[in-house]
Amino acid sequence: MNPKYDASFYIRVLDQYVATGECSDTDDEPLYAYLLSIMNDPMIKIQVLTDEVCARIFYDMMSQFIHLNLEKEKYNLQKSQSEQNGMKQTLEWSIARRKDGWQALLQQVSDKYETMGFGSSFYKSQFGNEEEKYGDDELWERMVEDWEEAFKRNLQEQKKKEIDRRKESLENRLHANLKNIPEYLRRHEVEKDEFFQAWGLMSGMWNTVDFERIRKVVRMQKEYPEIIKIANLMGRTADDEGRERLHVGQEDVYRLEHSSKNDIQGVTVGNDLNALLPTEMVHCADDDLESLFIYKYVTRKLQTFRYKSEIMQPARSLETKPAVHKGPMIVCLDTSGSMVGIPEKIAYSLLVKLLEIADRQRRPCFLIAFSVSICPIDVRKERARLLDFFSTTSCGDTDATRMLKATFDLLQSKKEYMNADVLWITDFKIPLPSPKLTDRILEYRKADTHFYGLQLGIAENEWIPFFDRVYRADYPVARCY
Image (cartoon, rainbow, N blue to C red; front, side):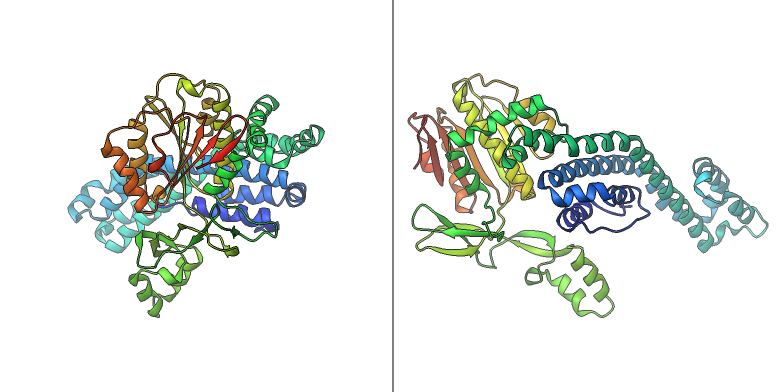
């Protein structure tokens, strides 16, 4: 029993609204209906469509609200799983069990769903007469269907109550942020890119103290330009004309090319007709299943092959090629005592920039903070933890063993990280682990997983042979190997 709309549906609605201002008038699903009521507010629409900062504020706050309510709905569904299973089992009751159990069953369902429109009196009159109609399979199935409909209406009512409980607080914060934040940025001459990066860490909870603290970290990027260079290596951006393209040059600039189509990585969902699974092709060719195929195409739910389509190769001439969105990012951040001071600040500044890229490109981004122990954080889903992390101070010794094992586990077992870029931010004062672990780095690189590094300081680095590329930030000069 799935929700009417999933998270991807709401994201598409928000994307379209922020880009064009277009949205439906109303809907009967509580969360979508509430979202539409906000989007159809003329004042909000004007602000979102005329101010890039307001658009970002609206998008992030509504995305967070949607995610929160969908998680609550998911929890309620899981909590009622036994009741859903009970409906299925009731359909399989024997005639003898129906005879002995129909009265107790109707009483149980009626006690819970009488106000949701479940007509228990009708079924009591049918099952209790001399004809013993509880043996009528069609009537019995109809009773279970009515039970299921009442169950769904009850879930929707719970969802509406959850929204009503939260919406006043959301609207107050939204209106205050749309008014106060642009005014603050103008008054303090804050650049948009600085705002977007700092705001990305604040989970929609604006306060000037946290903002200015994070902004100081962001401004390190002007002093150390290697931060932006590495961030762009991990995630390409559009050119000035708005087209997503890569400029390709000699030697130190790289270009993306597609690997061959027989390089199958796994199975995913989407609407790429060139990568359809054979079963989906059958649906396309069958007249009776054609409408199902069209629906799955429109909703991007066709089963397709996934290919390793991004391979970095040295560019030998200057040209322009379409850029392909890259995969997710795994960031391994050294938090040992040797990172205290400027290295720590540079590292945090790069991390904030990577988070902004991950948000903008909808790319998963996973942080593994390490010294001897590790602290893993899904940076797009755990903003509160990430903000707390920025308040800690580096300390302790360094050991890459646990960090490497955690990285390999992500690459191996988490399908969303199959095509990841891995970035180390460290002074590389790290003893080499066992050859078994370093050999695995080389194995993943052969499988087109890219390992990049930012070395903070000028210590001797034994790790360089295991990386695609290592940048080095000396103070104040930066260079790369």
